[in-house]
Amino acid sequence: MERGNSKHGPRLDEQMSQEVKGLVQGPGTGGSRADEARVPEPAGEDQPEATTAPAGELRTGAPKGMSSEDVDRRSRLGRFITLSALPGDRETLVANARDNDAPDDIIAALQTLPDGTRYQTVSEIWAALGNKNETTRW
Image 1 (spheres, rainbow, N blue to C red):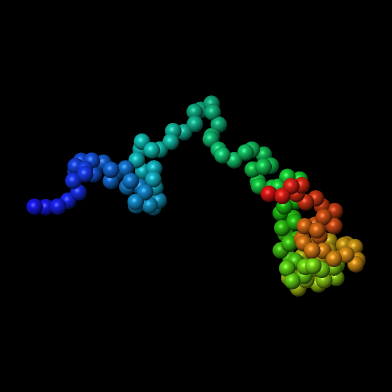
Image 2 (image 1 turned 90 degrees about the vertical axis):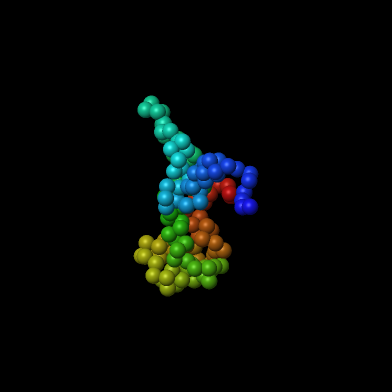
């Protein structure tokens, strides 16, 4: 007597294996949408494409109070100031930026910082250079 799975018949087993074929074989062979019935229908001719991202500036991920260009410029400034320089004053920050091969415009901006002030973060340096930080935290 042969012992096998008696819960399903061969036809149902085959149908069930086809339903999960895309999940089992992975994305290299068509992914989980390999079955034509699972492919979503495209938007109509007079309807926009579906998206989960909002339109406009929010789409870039920039925090409130900053544009995406501001975020990029602050990030660029932060790439040339290492944590070992913080907290630090103008001379420490300029020396650290030079050690990190900062471009001339970054060094020139750091040299305009007021003398005798110690900065704890890149955001404080950014604000001292006359720029805006985000208005709310995440």
